[in-house]
Length: 89
Image (cartoon, rainbow, N blue to C red):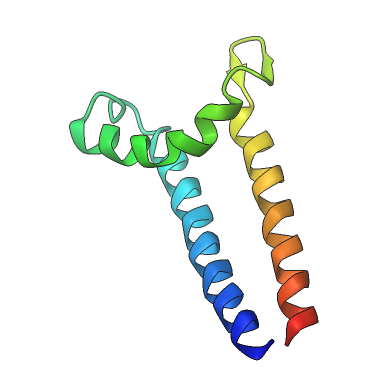
């Protein structure tokens, strides 16, 4: 059980780092003119496999609130994983 808890703990931290990476990439997208840059397109493609699944689900006027929905579900999954880790350790 201890080994499984440790493995899940590593997975939790990797997923937590990815969450912050997604937040940083989305914040960078607010900088004018950066969307057309090649380096930004590469960064964006690494988060689109997750955030892209929600695209268009929560649109209010010209504002796409998709990242918020994606973050809520992602945080919920991280919270559940953290509860499992605490139970196992």
